[in-house]
Figure: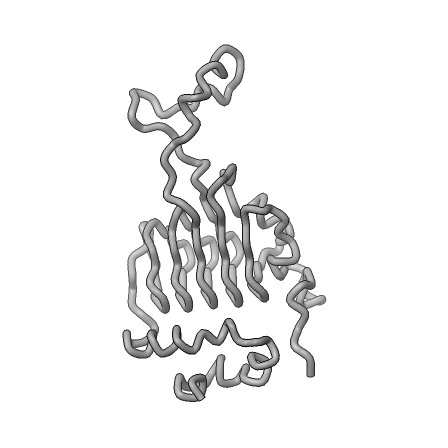
Length: 207
């Protein structure tokens, strides 16, 4: 049997709340890998408008392959920054009028760089990711977590601000899993090994 098409909008025709993000994201500032999906009963195809906020560039959002994004998963981008070095944080120039003459006061604010999500990352309901964070392969972001710092590969984080709860595997096994990098296998090889990827041992993947 052939592998599923990574370019369809709805991989489950009977569940229109699920979309493959690669098929619906149009912004050149967002990169999404094959089979990463978003689940939302209201407007899943509006992900890049509703869930990627203050994305005025040039920083990018990069989401790897085989990621699962639960309803309400949101990314705050660097455009949300306000000045904090003066008496007020209010962005007067964006209101227009004579205030617009001072637009230089809000351009070039320091940013934290690209937001990078690895492969096979699971985001729980209404998780929030702040600008410039890197989330490692195989990580799990708990429901309601506010991620302000980098997350290690195969780490589980939760809370506000999110803290590392534990790692899913030992350091040695994490290294072995990263070395297999099954998400980079040709899709035919993934298809032939779905059972091992989902429920097998690291030894099976290595073989």
